[in-house]
Length: 216
Image 1 (cartoon, rainbow, N blue to C red):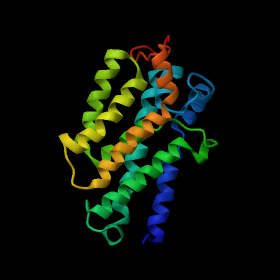
Image 2: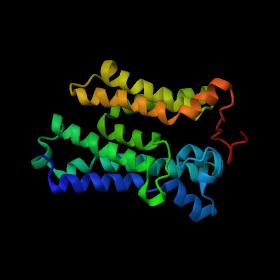
Image 3: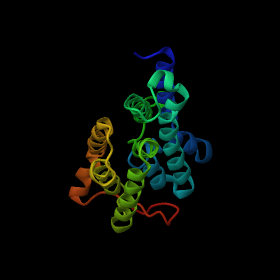
């Protein structure tokens, strides 16, 4: 049974996720709402595309931090509510907090519920849950990105490898982590539906991280 502290932590996790870093940084330093340009998303990829790496890198790191911080709120709640650290109950509650942050990023209360696609925040979450599998995702993401220059394809590939990682490469004993990994991949597919359509048509924009702005 959830305590009042557990419920408040879930709300706080959602609020962490709702911090619209791309929107606030764009408006504060460039007088631009990134949602009005590029793909229209308030995420790191569109920030790289619209404002360049000087804005994109901080947005990406802060979005990752949102997911990591929210997931680790389980440690603040303590074992009295969730059971022993890294128990099934503790891990499940950590996942719930991370999911709350991701939902906040997708539908931010501080930015009119118009957010990003949640990939960086998802990564922060899995970084807190399973370090080895998350580093494998980074490796796959970077390889695909360098080979194709498609951030969307790199994100989809990293999302695909995560459930494989926690199932076969770095197997976990808590089934909810595996189920969550599968849900991650499905969520990424859903949020990248338009990107997938553009990839199939050969019209997806490429991102060059070595330039201030993409010419795509």
